[in-house]
Image 1: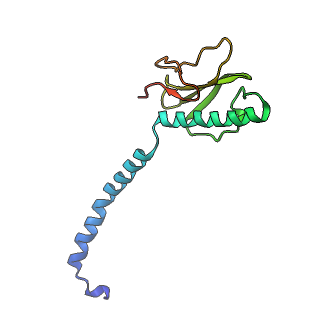
Image 2: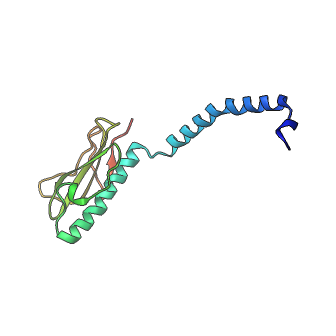
Length: 140
């Protein structure tokens, strides 16, 4: 049907409806994007699980755990910083922090290290209790 056959009075309301719904569509898309992004605690736990897997590979290849994250060749996670607190032949401990959660952390340990208790979180000072399971502060 040629455009000349479409009455102009029907195009104006349709155009107005289309333009008025654009901000709503953007807001819905932004809300969905925020809802699908993992929480900070989930991001930190995921990073520590990646460290655990990388440390297992490192130990299998070298009979010792890595004393820093560099040799583990972990992919960077935006806003997340992981550090190996202590490592030796029989175990290791690590902490992860998120830049948007100052004073909060997650910790993990594998094995036992002579003279070292299990790591504690920064905020709640909770001690990791189960080997290989990340423990996090309450996040804000």
